[in-house]
Image (cartoon, rainbow, N blue to C red; front, side):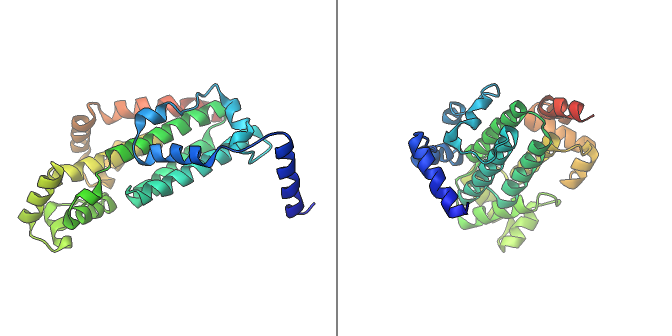
Length: 257
């Protein structure tokens, strides 16, 4: 049977069985909640891990006859769409794509549908939270917006306010005052906060040591990194990793061993 004939056959069969995919407007509303950071609304749409049958329903589409593989395909499709929509709505591109890669890599390691759905819920909330925290760049001046973009692209470097101002070809004092006026934050704090949020993702999705993470993001020492992290997140990197990494993936690691 050719693809064209198979398509016509499937459309006919779905019509006979009264099977339809999710309404387009409903799907758009779902993605709009994410890109606009509507955590309260998104919570209502999360699927509980025990309700794995939802993805085997025809509303989501059957991407594979194998239920687990079908779920994996849906996960990849979902994170791919969300990543691109979030970038379109202002999320820093490298952050979004790297986060997407990390989630897909972790999903690929999980052996059960329940764990994949749990991870998908975490992924949805993570992207939504980042969009909720995202400064609405259209409300900022060009220099502040460009400064934020430069900082987010160079988190692995030891950034200084002077360096960012020089890249923007503006006076350091002028840039610092403008940034503080428009965002309510100092440039140095914004740099540190973005580095720490990126470091938190590495704690969740990698087994790099604290020394390696500290060095990668340009902290002067591991102890300085730990001090800054604890001040920002009210817990140590070790406690953060234990809560958000081991809790989610320890069962999968045990299974693989």
